[in-house]
Length: 140
Image 1: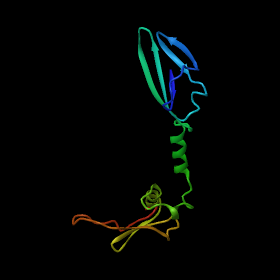
Image 2: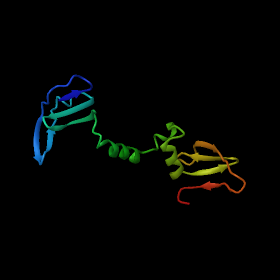
Image 3: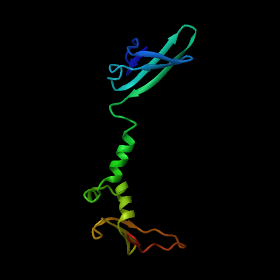
């Protein structure tokens, strides 16, 4: 039996193949995958333990997404994005790593890639045993 997104159970429409020794493979139909949301499968047979499994049907490929999103983020040209990035963002962290950072009084300034425009100003906090970093530049 199959239930799409909490609807009443219906008989399977796909094909079942026994692989070997009681191990079966069920090929879902496109109609069984047409409704996004939860999909429940219930297999029952006389003298056999009932098997119930829930899945979630999504409109995107969950296996392709992580690598494609990571690729887009890591390969993105940040030059056009940097001015609009939220201050506590991954892009700002990357700017700290690839752009210049310098001390200005009691603050650390993080610059955009042009080395002139200040992206972020943060107060320096130290305890009595610490010495703050004065300047960090790319390649230095």
